[in-house]
Amino acid sequence: MLSLSNPLLFQTASEFLICTLALFSHLSFADNRSDFREDSTLVFASDPYCPYICDKSAKHPGFFVEFARMALEPLGLRIEYELKPWKRVLAEARSGVIDGVMTLSREDGDGLLLPEKPILTTCQSVVTSKKSDYRWIDAESLAGRSMALVAGYTYDGPVREWLLANQESKDIHHIHGAKALEEILGLIAKDKLEMTISDCNVAASTAMAIGYPNTFQYFLTGYRVEMHIGMYQNHPDAEIIVKTLDEAVAKMRSDGRFQQLAERYGIQNVN
View 1 (cartoon, rainbow, N blue to C red):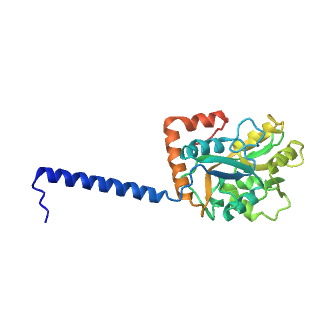
View 2: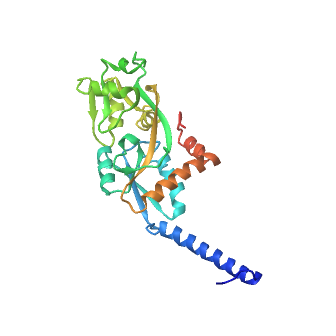
């Protein structure tokens, strides 16, 4: 049996043990990252949802695109994005045609891997023309008003149960397509519809983009909309990516970059 009473032998054995532990730690970390594909491209998608994810012709790509690049490009990943109708986005993400989804609610996240916390939390609003006499009180105040909604969207908060109970109403229309919200706001501006329900920042940004900057009024319902970035759950790097996104939210909030990015896009009522 080896005696360690000799100081030189003890030092040699200690150094050997430290090196062995360091090597084991390195190998364990490498094994955790064994499937990580550096210098690869991640393709995310959404429907047009500016200021969070914007048309390719816009000056800036959108809050979520810039956030994802700031969070993931240090890992050696390139971030690309596509704009498609929402139902198609979800179907392609769940089947692995694309790598993930931006501006995703947890309710739409079935079959996808999401970070523990949302990227941001924003506001839900009822949007009407400024000429309308409508005033938000509660979901029942929507009764008897003609409205259009984006087909495939999940509407939560105080309007959820009312919409489910009235889904067969002739007053509620569903508009399909990647630019459904633009079409809906255009119909409201032309007095062919009374209202829609939308994220407050998206509605205001879309109204500005289609030439109606001072046409609408926005009534906050009080519901806070949590938005995530979701990954195809069988993507080999999905767990590393969502963990990195969680860490990036905390880091960017603490160092001020998160608020700076929100201000650049004019995003309000956000936390």
